[in-house]
Length: 598
Ligand code: GDP
Ligand code: MG
Image 1 (cartoon, rainbow, N blue to C red):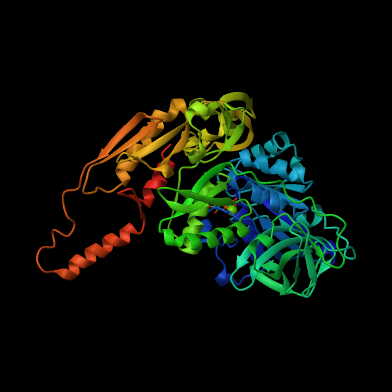
Image 2 (cartoon, protein in one colour):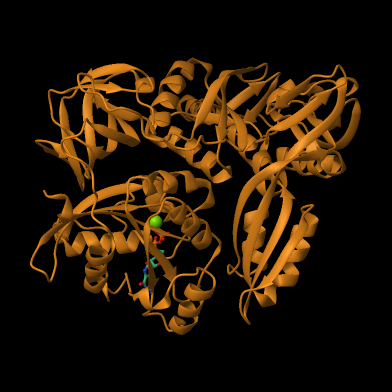
């Protein structure tokens, strides 16, 4: 395929503005899937994406398009996630493209991630086509959005294309615009191979599979390739393109996007962001790669059944191959045994990993309370980074503590400004700016501690603005704080996995919330269980679970052995999701609800 007939572009937008729906229309329009097999949000292939209706992974697909000019174009499009936790996925998708469709919901207008995504696309020099979606809605305000495109985004409004992804209005015009406006790739076929790995996944039969964008050269099965960063050599077994699924082909050329199978069994041999070239004719220098991802939330994962540790370990490696932003290392806990300390890009990312471990690998796991990364200056002059409450030094050794701060950008209809200002103030926010974007919308800019937005911030923001406010953030620096470790004691025994690092003035409040949650989640035992929250030796909260009186089998009197057995089996089944801590059974749910109790 000549490069002038190729277009590589991504679809970017705030969450729910219709990216996946538009990708559906492109795929249907190209008739690459039979109608009876088609399902909505077809690129969202993970169960969890379908259930939650959100895109987590960027997904590439190549569709043919016959333009008015009579030429058959190959459009390689990438659907991207919209949630702030997954902006790393967007940045990688962007680096495999020459252009971007920036979608804006005609009834919502420009929102926080619309801006964040726009900046990312500008940074990578992409040609940006503003697209107003959902023009079918009665509440659509196309004129208003056109003004926002000029004013908020600084893009010429006359460039905007108006569509309804849902009702398939304007799709052909949009595809023509893509062909006209987005530049064709301009790689050199004859130069040494230079390909960027922008994603990867694991296949049980074929090993690690690389998703690549070729910038120069050609790659074919049988080639010996050299991975520059890891300095490993592999023989190419298969190359192909992304259709719905994978389609092998004879070669991939400069300008194209596709996959490479090379019998890679050791997962760490594939590194997202790295450059692939030929062994015998290498390129002069590596591609710039990606900015390093910085985990912002840390938590430990433990198998509920200690025997599952090896399985968990294998699962983590496979997940990491498909999610380059997941970080982990070994960890152990007195209460929970061996597990992994993990870094995530946010709480939603954490939840997604948890669900994927459970669903894709059938594992039963518990997470410990999430923490941000703290800097601590010790009285001996040293400075350490602590992400795990287990590593928190004794108060007497601490000189000063620092916590990460973010710059948060909120966009809201003006009637909710008051609500949001109170929320941000409560979360220790400091207002930097308040801008009237137009007569109806306000942009608020705050500095806040990252730890404050981790818990219920997003949900509260949504409920205080009836779902209309949007939020984006970036970590800016660290500031001095007053940090303590809150320990949770069950039956007088501290449970290391439930400890958390908190801002001292919030300690008692947090402790009460956790103790109360635990009281609700822990089943009664034969004995009374006190639950306490402690900072050092000071008890700051307390609840009690009273003792159980009845034996569960007592009511099946007499000889009905089979019924009795059934009841006991059922109890055993329930225990699979329990963790013994000292002599107390802690249900998996208890860990989760502690995690969520803001
Ligand atoms: P994404 O988060 O950007 O991928 O958005 P989705 O494609 O998942 O769409 C979010 C919601 O908006 C879904 O309920 C879609 O059915 C709906 N939607 C998408 N495009 C349109 C449109 O053109 N008109 C209307 N009325 N709804 C749409
Ligand atoms: Mg989507």
